[in-house]
Every structure is written in C-alpha cells, then in structure tokens.
Image (cartoon, rainbow, N blue to C red; front, side):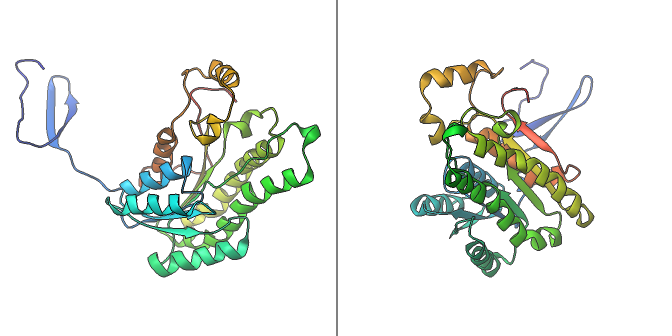
Length: 279
C-alpha cells in the first residue's frame, strides 16, 4: 500500500472501485444473493458436478431441489448443507428417464416451493466401449437418461420456466459432444444432441423472456475421472492449454452466472469450460 492511500480498519471488508485516473472510492462490501427466493431444480444433484452446482446455487440464496436416483444419503447431506447457509433445499428422488417419476418430482417441488424458476439438466450416465462392441442396450440406456431425461424434465417444468420472471434452462453437456471421444459413441451423441436442443428451446422460450443455455465442461476431477488410467490422463492433459483438469467449482461458477440475472440477454449459447481445448 502506498503511504498516501487511506487505510481502513473498521472491521469491515471493502471494495476499491476505480473511477478515474488518480481517484478511487471505497465502498463496504454488500452480500448480494442473486438467486434469493428462486427455485432451482438440479438433476443428478447429489454427487460430482451436480453437487457443486446445487451447493453454489444455495450459496446465492436459492431454494434448491437436489434430485437423485439412488444416492439418497449424499442427497440429504447436500440438502442439509444448503439449509445451513443462506439457501433452502429439499432432496427429491426421481429417475429422470421415467416420465412418471419426473412428474412426481414436479408435484413435490410445487408443494414446497410453488414451482421452478431454474432447471439444470445435469443427470447423465456412461456405458463406454468401442462401437464395434457396443450393444443396443448400451446405446439405449445412455439415450434414455442423457437425452430422454432432458426431454422429460424440460417438458415437465417448461411452463414454470416460461411463466417465471426470467426463467432459466441450463443443460450440462460435455467437450465430448464437441470433439467426440474414443469408446463413447453413445455418450458423445447425447451430449452433442443437447446443442441443437438448447438452441431450439431457446428460440421457443424467447418470447417469454426466459433463456436456455448449455454448459459444456471439459475433463473434470470427479469420481469418473479417477477411474481413468494415469497414462490416459497424461495424454488428456497434453491437450489442455491450461494444463490442469477442471474442478467441479469451475463448472458450478459458470452455471451460477447462467442461472442468474446477469445472463438475461444471453440465450441459445454453448459455454465451453474446458481449459482452452479446441472444438
């Protein structure tokens, strides 16, 4: 600090705002809850990227619906953590590939919070293998969750999102949908399909003032990545200009922006969060 700069020691944090060369103003930091009273449904919200998204939205004061299929203990843990902060949360079980279960989830959300403002389609699965060895069952299981689940959830919550004050649809895709990936023909197809779906739904929602965007993470440090052999991970790192894997918080931070008010003039976009990897 230069000797001619004022020093504040009043117990508060401050923000220094530059106004003009040689002049500065200092204001107390204000905690802004950008999603206060907004209800956000996060599918697959009990683990990995979904958990980080749910927790981050909760930190912004949101009412968070932590959807899970089988990870009940983890979902309740996430919800309890959100309740301990500025947000509110409920865990709701539903297999997103089953339309009747998604409708039951909608009823639970409506009973507690009165409808949804934000839907984050995050739930997904993989059934990896070379295409020559891939079975029809491997193909259909991935399609039913990764695309069918997105259809089921978006269809069920669509009216809520359009009727909300600036509703938000956020689809979680992958760099694999942009580049393809050896042994993931089924997964890559679903994640690529989300691009066209997002752009189309964005057009159809635009008249209501609500938006639809897609976040496409690169390779993220999750349990799934831990199963990849070290030699393969080293090859992946060689393709990432930032020379590191993403954290779940890297992805959640972008979702927070897309779900919030600052993204109101952005729709139909694909946000690549991949450390600089090319398409």
